[in-house]
Length: 384
Image 1 (tube, rainbow, N blue to C red):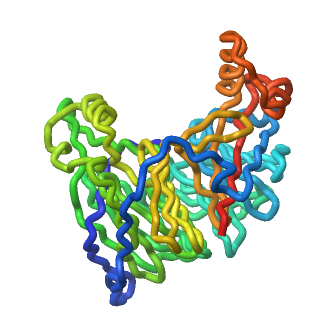
Image 2: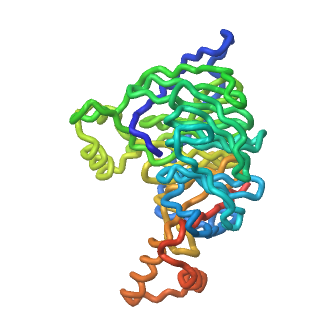
Image 3: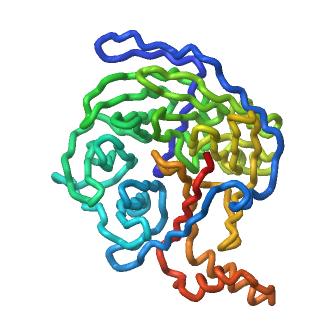
């Protein structure tokens, strides 16, 4: 996503809501998660119920650079390409159906999309737009429904069944959560106190080193803040600290933010020390909690009270892996995105090095691929 701002949540939140309603912190037990062990690879067949590769059709009307959001609803696979500022709609087998992407400043047009979410109750895609600030709604066939003007820019958003929860943008972390009923009727304004942020020593600029989603949709919306190993929940006007993860020596020491170093130096130190400094892409099922850090995947078994961190998910069909995944809201799935040219390069390198390839499914896939094809979406089903 197009993000260059740093935000931090404090574990105590001061909340004010429309009509002076008395919203307060939810009084409940915080779940403390202590990592039991660190592993290199999570082989897909050892945890997930299934893994399905979806090859997205490629044609002149559907050219995807990258995929930032994925939705699977009503037999449609919907992806948002932030680089192209377009939404593409496929059937669940990858056949292209329609795109949403009319650039301009007039009605039913936008210059840039800041976020895309799915309203489950209404069955609508919601596009939060920048320049001009507005919210646009489309059905799952890509038909325009309506648009509503906004008075501010929203950097992040999630949904909770029929409500839209937006995070505004602020350079120094003075953030608010705004909770809206459809189409954009404000129900609650939740103030988030200012906290730490990374300030580069070279310019009056703040940076966000985020690779994923800090807000995720569901029956209870989840969100997190950079540099804090905490997952918060929002439900019915109440924010509460839900999970606190103990990464031990691997979590970023906050005094590093005060060392007056450049972004490059910060990232170099984090890489050398193995520091985790983000907790994102939170997905919760009845039994499991999954989340990404900047360099790993964490799985917490709520029944066994046991957490493991993995360096990457190894897909046994394409014989490649990465830790990063994308939530698929209102399903028991997560998704990973593989670029076809990388798959082809991997196979060609093995052949060049005379490394035998015994994976018949991979060889068959390679014969069918073109290096300029759209990315492949891998859908993993989380066990219950």
